[in-house]
Length: 94
Image (cartoon, rainbow, N blue to C red; front, side):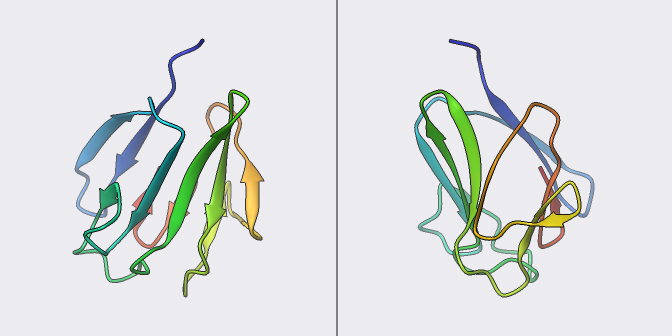
């Protein structure tokens, strides 16, 4: 299986590389998320999930207030990801 990872860049330019070794990762401001960015006011408490099904990754918007976009297009509610896709959520770029 090919190694998957996501690179997350914050508004301040800090980059974080996250290897995707599980099947599901949640992202948001709340501390119960796998990827917590409590300082990002543009994120909902439970903003999005990255899910792997059959080796394919998808992003799911979890009913966020400000929405989630892939390559500038709103996710409604789920979108399969391709290598190099750019996800925006709050002030984060994934």
